[in-house]
Structure formats: structure tokens, C-alpha cells
Image (cartoon, rainbow, N blue to C red; front, side, top):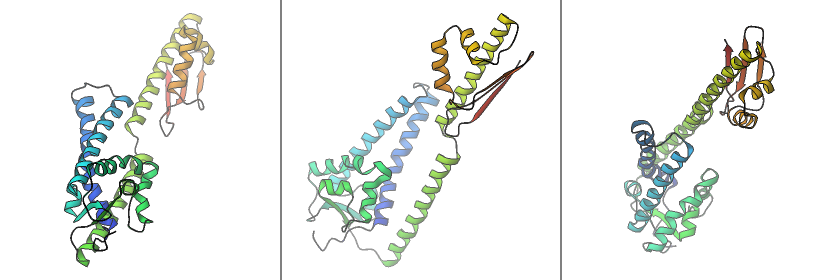
Length: 262
């Protein structure tokens, strides 16, 4: 490595990475909102979200590849760092593409390939090692500017961790809401089957098998139950003039849903 090219500070690399990534995250969620909510062109499904994710991921790789070829993305330029070969020369087109695609290797397992830079002598990530690249300082920073970047990086990192904890542990996701909605819909169907059973026999039933038989399609009934409800926590109670059905939805919290009738 050329000793006149000190490796970029990890704090600057982190902030540049976020600056480059945020527009693509906004684009991804904006696409979902536009095509699912606003225009209603796509169904609300995992497949639709995957389609949008892959499209924006490919755009991000193209953006990174072009930035590698130019020596710096917009984010890297803002924070005074650039990417080059270990001898200080610009990356070749093949190296630029390899480094852009290498993000797919560095990202899994909680961004292990990025975290590798903490333990690598030249602060190189897996995609740097793959492409034969290194991120270096393009201009020298004062101690005050370096300290400011470090403080901002720490605050942003803490905010991201707190946001992830809130979103993934405390806040129900769209998929959780969908699972709960399906569970409520499933209970409505079971309630209708209970009413059909009473019209047929004169009584509500406490046996799930009776509801399955009344539904007229045992196989589909079992498949639907397994798809909508958790296998544990199902309660079916019935008296002469009323019934109660309780189940757990297939969201992350296994939310309890209840229907009483009539």
C-alpha cells in the first residue's frame, strides 16, 4: 500500500455509507406506497415487496459501481474520502463492479463484512478485499472535524439501534398487522360456521372437528387453520345460547384474537 494514503476513518466511512444509502431506502418505501397504497397496482404481499427491494438493490449496486469507477460516491466526496487500489491507482471497471456486487457479500450476518474493517489493519471490508480496493482520506481533516464526525457517527449509530429495537421489538410491522387481520377474518368465518352448525343441529359445538365437518371441506379447513392461527392457544367454548372462540394470530407477538356470539 502507498504510505501517503492513510486509510479513511471508519466514522467518515459510516456517515458516507448512510448518506449514499438513505435515498435508496426512501425510494424503496416510496415505491411500495405508490404502487400498493396510492395506485393500488400491486397487491400487499411479500412478493410485491421483494420485487421493489430487488429493483432498488440493483440500482444501488449500479450507483456504487459508478462511484467506485469515479473514485468516490456522493457520500464519500462529502466526507473527503475516496476508493482506489492499494497502490493508489483508480479501480478498473472490473474492480469497480466487483466491489459494488461485493456489498451483497458484506451485508449478511448483521453486516459482518463491514464490521470486518474494525479488525483489519487497513480498515478494509470484505468487498474491499474482494476487489483489491481500499478507502483512503482524500483530504486531511482537523482534529475538531474528526471529533465532530466521531460524535455524529456515535449518535446516528445509537439512533439506528434504538429505531431498530422499536420497530422490530415494540412496533408491529405491516406483516404483523396483516397476520392479525387474517386471524380476525378467520374467526369471523369460524363464527359463521358455528351459526351454520346450530341451524343444522340446534346447538353450538365445543368441538373443532364438528366445525370442520360443518364447513364441508375438511382438508381446506385444516389447511386454513394452520395458515392463519398458531397451533397452541386455541380455545373453543359453547353453551346453549352462545359461544366463544379464542386463538393466537401468526404475528411475532402471537396476538390473542377473540370472537363471541351471537
